[in-house]
Amino acid sequence: MGNGDAGPPEGSDRLFGLTRNLALRILSTLVILPLAAGLLVLGGAYFTVFVAALAGCMAWEWTRIASERSDRAIAWIASLVSALVVVFSPWLEQDHLTFAILVAPALILGAALARRCPSPAWVAAAPLVACVACLSAVLLRGGEELSGSIPLIWLIASVAATDTGAYIAGRSIGGPRLAPRISPNKTWAGLVGGMVASAAVGGICGWLMKGADPTVLMILGAVIAVVGQIGDLLESSFKRRFNVKDSSRLIPGHGGVLDRLDGHMMVITVMAAVVLVSGQNPLIW
Image 1 (cartoon, rainbow, N blue to C red):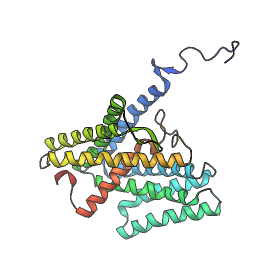
Image 2: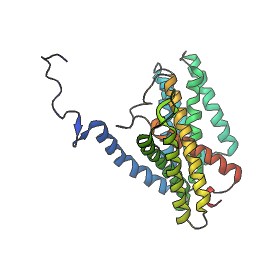
Image 3: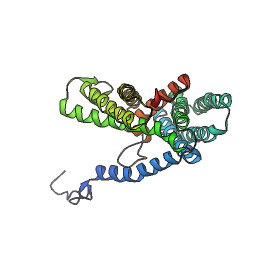
Image 4: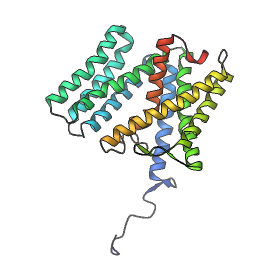
């Protein structure tokens, strides 16, 4: 900047005494977290519509990235299709729901090819990625009973603990990088710290809940941390492939929905698959 430039006014990049980005991050959290928690506890149609909105946002972000922002129409189509599949999922038979999940990517692929989008296969993956994760959340939540919210609360708390533990351990210990080509800031120490924190959440849940085994939930907590980090790395790899830093700017201070829910998506999807195969609530294994 030359000597003749006045520059921005002092404090223009700060809000409430904090950096603008941090202030926006805190304000967004204060708005979104209570809303999401309330809808999760309510369950039923309220939660399904909320998750459908998330599916639409994720499909929109994924398509915009994969198409290199070349076609807004495809992004909105993928968003609408994904949201509709999730919204109507409670009323669809299993066969019909499976058919919808398979047809949605085919429709987006056809549209992407017709409009000559770059990377049409990646574009077509948008509704599959969004719908599978969000339908898994609807499955785990169940109906409107309050008890149905407990497995999801446990998983969400475990992923949050993983991120916190990984951040603290990674910053304080450092050491070898976990996946330097994908996410240079992640370390093996951070992974271990995340596993310990998530295991602690599992142990607390097991101690508080009747019929739960703290040891089993501690082991599951450590596994959840690994699964969540895999989800994080996969999303980072996807963004790196298309040279994108944030999936969008939908959440002020946080980036996009995919950025915030990458680990949650993987954990919830894997746990839903385990529940379908075992037919049991993992909290009472």
